[in-house]
Length: 259
Image (cartoon, rainbow, N blue to C red):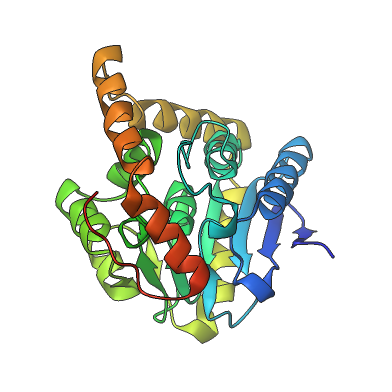
């Protein structure tokens, strides 16, 4: 069964997440399907792409598929992790990608949404960065995605507390572009996509790439990068990391010890 539905209306393309049994959790297969769709639409010269869930979804995406995370002794979010491939595909897609969001956005799905070029959301949308609930050490490139979406203090609040923030607060903080009544969300998102599509596509793709490079222009020495990776290894080699993954799979509250 396909995990995404794709469609095209003129210069505007749509990718619909369609894994309702797992709340659109970002499994390898689902990520591969999204990446393939982005690549196809780029080849077809789509000028704007809307990334969305099914209408009325209670959860836009539950984030990284925890069942696919290792229980320890290996980086859970390495370079070849599916989530990293998806973020790179969104960022490198020449057409602007608009996240159209209803419902909850959890964990790694927050990074996916924040990596999109524009975000429009209904009032019931919430955003929660949840690795601290699992004991998962987020990686450097993922943290940069969050820092490019909002201020350092907001990133700290989101990653330390793992509590969701509302669409209204996200709009006030500039994390999302527009909060729109649910009944108007689809029309608003596609009007925005159409407005983009009538402008010069080459100029837009170049400006998108310029902004991507500028947003990533945060120098880090090899020594500091290795320091961060060393700190992350402490976490994913820890008892807490294994406990967080086991607790999630067993549907119980984790008991973290700090070891």
